[in-house]
Image 1 (cartoon, one colour):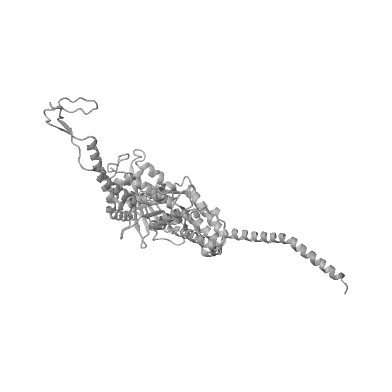
Image 2 (cartoon, rainbow, N blue to C red):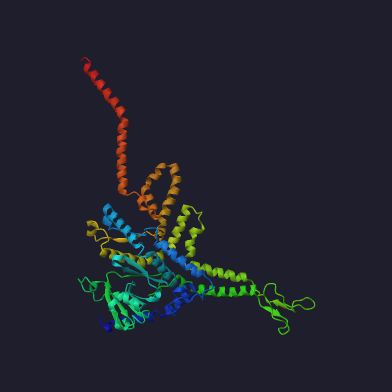
Length: 540
């Protein structure tokens, strides 16, 4: 690729960089008060430099990790299998297909949570960025023999663009590497302008650009990068050289937004929505600190500054000359006036508003009321699922969906997936991804609530008419309750197993009936034999 092509890619990058100037100013305001370590948008800090000078109240700083932990536990919990694969409708009853898809799911979770993959920590960082700035990006790298590696990309490094459907399909990542790191990454592809620093300044930094966009020049039938859906370029910004040209079969970045405003590409976050309260609370906390300092260490008023010696404020000190002949003090403290409780109440209101924005109060409901009954807990979960429906829908479509599609593509090309049943291949393979995270189950809590309420009411009816309960398919009710509550699939018997057990039970009952009927049948046969014998001996 020629230098003029690299220049064109850098020009497009500069236009995307200029577009988000207003966003960066707001992100910097948020970072200073909510996530200081990520404040790299406007001000460039030296390594180890303190960044917390804007923080006077830690409510937002504590709410953000709680938000990220809640999102992780409700969307991608480490201790649960939060999605499965579903076959086409025509094969939903095939035991072989369902067993294969379950094996694929188990393998996916084993590879995703492998020690070297680092998915859990990087997903957590992505949710942190989502809660603070409204946009989070996770890079899914094909590590070949080393397996998939996941890497959260800081928002300060990433620039995005949408396609006509509102999906992120262009990502530019601007980052720095030392000469030594660049040599490790690209070896002999580095231009002489950089390589000459290898010996005398190996820690000198250069800026690089990783561009991923749809491959508009896709060549049909090509098995290399020219035939891939996405083109990728690695460029040195200072020298305007293309270091590597390649491609991706599937988009390697999972970029999600919390919410978006009309005609805006980047997302808006809980911290953005609560920024006014966050800034107000910090100013109020600063004022309260000054008030507390005045109360505990107030200024001192004296009668005549020229006539009195300086105070000694240490414990047990003697200050001579500060009493008149009548024993009245010639100096006193100037105590602040006013009721501090008003300020404290106003600050608590701001804290509650911030916690609501970060969903802290929403997730705290079940923790604060552990004495709730199962039905009450189900109702609470139903309410929570309804309130979080917009959030979960967006994260499924923008984060989890592209993530799983990218993983399946890498695993398929690596040959780590077992061969699929022929009938599944004939139908085109996996039909859909079904999410089963706690947040999804809470959205389905209405089904479980309806079942429990119905059984509760019908218990009263059954006391009068026991046959009323025959209306319900109890095994199907139990299956739905187990699914909604996240019970392990291995404890739920399949329909085929239930049918087989019912058939065996019927055979056993039939055999038992034969055994029980044998004595009576024997007596009947004996009586008939005796009757026949008597009839044969009787004279005509």
